Image (cartoon, rainbow, N blue to C red):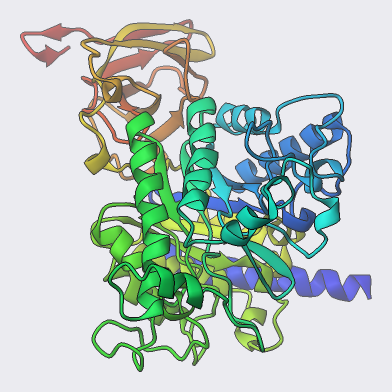
Length: 537
């Protein structure tokens, strides 16, 4: 049985490898591409593996996850730091999560700040850290007795609870209609933006709850008491969510303009039979706009979010909701915002309702569609554990075929007031085994002009070549490099090379390239080729 399993896995992987190789032969591997993954903490889906682990064990598990993800070529993690009205960090307004310690309100032992640790761990591996938050879910069940005394569902007086919360199905939710709730949620986000070095704030798809049989939202009295000019309760509900999104966005940008704000909505905004002019050719049973009251298009049109990552958790050719159809639809409705496709890694070889997920090339084909569409800037996978299990060789395919090259997260020039200062190579040195470069950047004024990391390019010969060819990109430096130096151990003796350096700021916007420097690697060191009246000799 084990041998048969290994043979099937081997065959599936190499089928995908062959197919993907054909695709990659037709498509250049991008050097700017979101390659992210959602790390779910609710119910301990991804991390930590169980509640109540020691601090050392939690850290070890997280480091191990990042090491594997880095090896797979990923460059960003979206970590769920607020699963259900709680926090994976010390907070003045939110209790500690039970998924971290086993009891809500209890701090990790020995004490440490998990969010601070995770951010530093990601940044040390040159991976972005986006703080994923579930804004409205107050509990994951109906057991209010186990909530911490500081949780608003226990701390508030009964008359206030009725305004702040409602029960739906087997959970409690924060009430989107309450102005006090909106301010509370803004304060929750503000605490993170002020205290932590996050690259982004990320909301998931849970706004108003997904509809359940025999369940009714009990907000008609609130609507009747203050309709705010809306004739339909559905429009009023959407406005409640709009107000939160708008105010969170304004708060983030007023404090740290480089922190990006994005949302990963349910993958179908509206079906065409609901909206012939703007809906997608799908037959989804629920939609963002009509069931979750999330008007994502308005958020993009209004400039409230910086990117959208729709959860396109269906296969190519799936009749009710075709991945290819939905990717095309979203690509035509971005309003200038970045678009990342959400992929259902959890369905690979694990979803009998759709046999397409038994095909070893499904994810490969989805990424090929992404790269063929200029409006798509990358992918985010849900979630970590399926990638670690490597169903149908997906992890192998990411390492060897889809993400074999280095890539940075795409920049957002519209948010940057200026490009970073242009670096200049100032010193060349070497040893028998390497070429050493040092550089500087002058005239740094605005915060966006400060370099955050650098790309080092090397071209064979004595001229600048193709920046889009992954072979010419030697390396990216770590974030927050204290020393602007790089050592190239791959240079061969008696060969000429041309080096160029490009800087990137916190928004991944690139600088002008440095002046090229031609270097001859000698057997003992390296020599810079000098200029004479603008010419190299």
